[in-house]
Image (cartoon, rainbow, N blue to C red):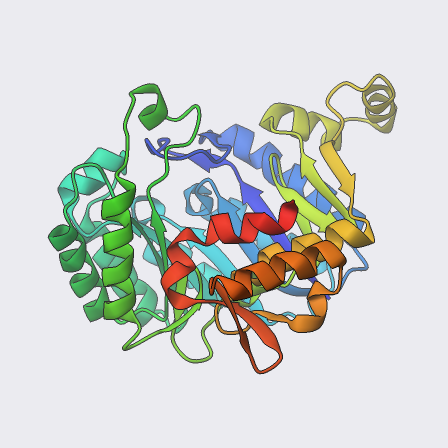
Length: 372
């Protein structure tokens, strides 16, 4: 069974830190894009879907008609008989009671809401177009609509944010009692507003904030992945399957997928994505033959060695689950494992290998050693 990721690249305004592919929302363009997504989905019509994640961008910026058309079409085109988790990302400023009611009726059973901070001054600094009250209002509506699996996204380690400020954010969020939390240190991505304006972050302060987060959240939540905390039975199935290196379908401009042992990335242009999928067959053939915006701009076959390497690098992110020690049977992987066990950055728990708690914040360095 497959995971399905659907990328909605539209936003009302691009956040200053965001490095994801997105464009400004336009009603007519979004109508055509939804039709293109449906055509793309038809290529996978026989696949059984276990989890769906509609992300972006800002999926909630779509109109009610567009959301309904997209989800109903996916339900009719793909095999949803074994669907377990259906996540829809939304932002407060583009959400409404009507949209949440529709999502509930269409089978969405998990929401991921972009909050990023409880402090309005920091939301403004990040380029967000909502305030904390707008978030609280839509969160309250979602609970009243019956959503019992809600994730909240937060960013910490901003240049003008002290550790005490972050503690206050966490205290407010804990009162909300959400089912899942995804917390990320601010990183400065290329071609973002922050990058162009030479914004920098302090890694030491971010580390201190991470330590505070662990102490405050681990009393109430299961810290099951480096950046993710969940209540019992509320781990993200879809994202966990990424970290287990399972295959998934990626629909949409700029979306990535992993299907039939091939990792791929779709063309990062809304117009060209639409044209390739909605043009006549003759035009499609000509575009592909002439190598003018083929649908997949990147693809790589994952051989056995690369699969094992990726499985280790992804699986070590799962802090409790880790990896079976047999995953390290390649001589190079085994040598790196022994080195990490000796310097106590990794440890053996029963027959599984997991990160040592105090090194989780610098896990990227530890995990990257298995590439060598």
